[in-house]
Length: 376
Image (cartoon, rainbow, N blue to C red; front, top):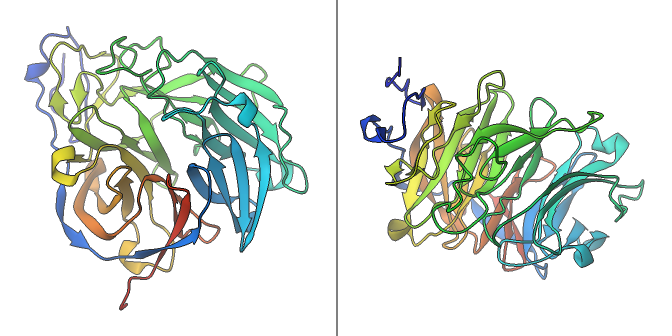
């Protein structure tokens, strides 16, 4: 029997694809005011389209930066070192390039790391690399873990991260074009439009679908204490969304709704795969209300220098540079969405340094860090 009681976060679906009007969506939290929990200051400039910034395990005093054309750069104080340059193997476009990096949980001792990039044909590649004692990365991959055809130049997703189950996770967009023209996100046999994971220590690594119904997940973050994942999924024409999903890996992959839904808004003529629970976004904003166009997912702050942000999820918009924070609420929801006073132009990534403090990558070529708000 089809259950329409959502338990606030999900609904188990059954039946045909023409009765979605019967499903009552759970409306996401929206902006309810402003806040001034932090300011930002620029700590580096002159980078080439940085898309990721953070600390590497075992190297807490430095920041590592991923540059879209194909370089990994280490910054410590005024020193800047290129650790890897594979620009000759990377196709760079608006949404193509060197898109993701993840460090093995034992990177400090084994030097294993993983990269996701667009090859010269524009297709997805994920491979393992090895860093030496001097942290320089051998440009020859240890092994290739994934090659995936990309039908368009956009919606490549990009992020890599290790989850609480020690598998490597990859967020993939729907393959591009407007309104998922190939219906990939709702196709359980297609990796596009999915969050997928692989055991990198397996003899024959296999990618498994963990979540479906994604349009273009631009940054996700794991909360291992709660077994959750937070995702910023880029919308089509109107709505940007934040998803908060309980990881239940013994259950069928949950479905975030695209392209049957943009946010919680129904898109006529698009079917919904009924194999897993439908999960509604916990927060959303509209383009017209904010001047935004593309969400950049963030993380729940766990540092010590910004007490007003503790246990708040921070995220932003690439185009507007706007930053918001919200408070996780019971039953897997969100509340108290506040627009922060600070802004970061062309916000491409929100990460943390070795102390767990917020750092931001700007597509203008800059790196910023969060500092205590003026007057505090």
